[in-house]
Image (cartoon, rainbow over all chains, first blue to last red; front, side, top):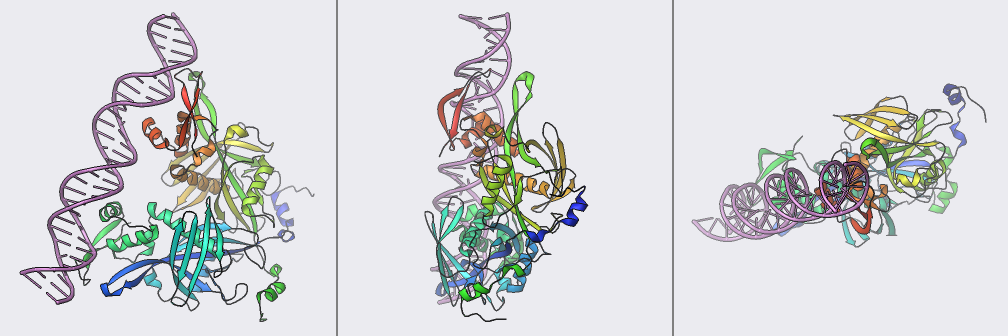
Length: 264
Length: 264
DNA sequence: ACTCTTTTTAATAAAATGTTAATAAGAGGT
DNA sequence: ACCTCTTATTAACATTTTATTAAAAAGAGT
């Protein structure tokens, strides 16, 4: 092997092309909370977590649904890549975006060796009810039974299902006919991440519009945590994070609620 | 563009080599807690967090210290890669290992575009006082001042320093002459991860030998959290996680302490 | 004016955590 | 054997946080 005197000399000779390298993509799990009127005769609205999927129009996995994603460019970071891809595929620009996990299983892509740097994004869906042609919001239902997680994703037209199993801190896909790649595992891990983080961070506010009632905020916590919370306890804990406005939400058939906004 | 009838046909023609790809490495921050006798005349021992570094023997960054790491192979996952590299460079086999973050800045490696999938590892240092020739344990001292984090790393022979600044959730290197690549940021993020996780997980026990006193365990929590804890409070909280043995630690010049072990 | 519904807060109970101080017990010296 | 030193261990109490129940508030619809 040649001996180099200094770094410049070494770098001038360096040829990266002699090494075989994996491809790298970014994939993004975009979560939001949808406001579906379930129980229309009583005028109740019930919130659902929803996930954004796009339909693949090329091989592999042609016509299957998948997370928005794509190959990174040589002149962009993975953060930049995920933002570019999201804007291109779904028209979504402003959002909360956080790196989730890098998936590197050998056969996760049938084309070639592909690593995926995954991201979790949170958006206020009311801002993005109009998204691109290819993308759809799917309401997410999870049925947890010990270590088995059964997922159902519903849009107006489609219903997708998959089953994960949790082994230590990893999710393994047990059943999946509808989603491309290892995207079931990415969704599972993404959901777990926001479940954990909603309790000790302020990410919930990324799912809310500027003004909201405490009842609406509580519903968002409830649907993500998957359990009912008691009003007074929730209000006490959340009170440090929000500030009252002088607006109220009226015309809802009962005592009007004060509108709040995120503090700081 | 050619129209394919099915996935097999598409895959047969697929040529990944026409795309330019980044290189991918794994880097591992191995933390442990060292038992340095500081205050020898009073026989007190004080614990320090320590980090494992290796000295680079080739360009780039020749003769600088860096985290153990290397390029991934085409037939291994990043998890497997990090284990292989750790065992090869440092002789460490059994440990707690968790993916930390994927770094993708454009110029983080002077050779070419390199993504690094970083890992945090925790080991009981008493098992690995004898590590490989190239590797050294460095005691870690952090001085936090608002958003500025000043790090000092000390081995018997060397003293390294660097300064990070925290901007939102990211660390930016402000000053660094001693460590290769962006490894200061990896160490900063790794330390933050274990600080957060020690409070709500059982990772602390990965730093302990099989049998330990509650005083020793408390010191580990204290050095990682960077603050003193009160004995009765600590004992109450930790009591669910440990079980008493019938052994005691004697010969230490005061009341002997009961040895505990990790429960479950 | 009355009923319905949800919002909002008051009041109380229970649990968790923080703090102080007393007791325990081996090592080492006298 | 007894005394002192040191840290281990726990008892007791204070404080804070969280959980729970129930009552009061207020607009919409009849």
